[in-house]
Image (cartoon, rainbow, N blue to C red; front, side, top):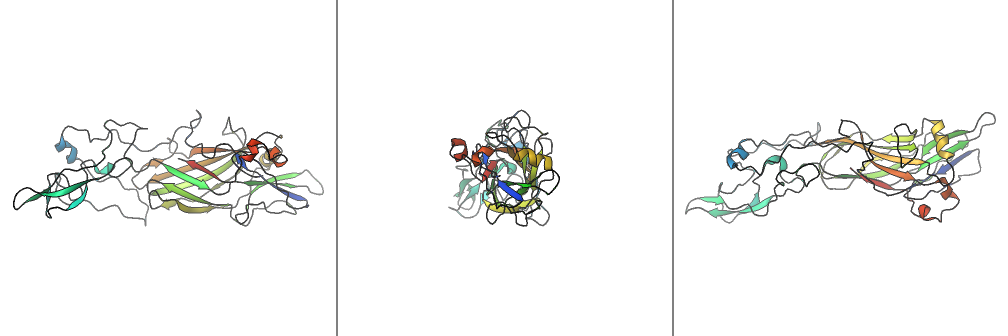
Length: 349
């Protein structure tokens, strides 16, 4: 069967005893970060306060260590510790601290290092000004954006991770039906072929396809290590349950995302064959006009600055669900629901 955003297509692949069908998914393509009362919201490590609103500049800079580092082994190293003094560190170019080249313009920051250039926070610019005939100091830090005082979760924050987007080019599963010479009909669910987006052909019982399932991309506003999973369940999209049987799923191995805010190719989704034949039959024999089920986009990860991306309890986070189209779309693809179908999908976590 095929997957899409509100359409379902059926493809018969030859007049053999093994028949494969392709299903598309329907519904909003990106209904991410939903809260259905069953799935807790994502958890990210946060700070109790942002500190920049402190009335004591002396206290502000006495405890300003570099942020934690959770980069992977063999990955980029943590930034080197700053030089200079506690009051005039070399990395901040604070107003009033010494400089050497009059008229020179450089980036500056008067806040805490753990917030610098993260989220809404941005460096300012300062100019080296003459204090006397022989001494110079950095002028005002103009244009910097500090965290909002007393900001809470959900407010514009200054931290490494705040948003990621996973796009998958093809989410269509195939439903295969095999009629043996004796015994009951056997249903299977398998992945489509990456080269064509179509179902493999079977002259006998279904087997795991030899081709991968789909290409995909990832874009995150922070470098880090991410594990992504896509799972297809037979069940009611509007009332999802952990008891809904699993038609098929793939999990990509943990991989390091190196450059923030760049959409980059992610490892291809591998081929799969479902292990629950009763679930495959339930999916394939769903009544006309009824969606056979839904897909779940799942993530777990950690940013290089130690933000945890999970369900709030250290577990996988289901951040998006995608509804598959009714099987009746195979015979009447003209309805609005069927016209909206598509093979691709994306979700934001």
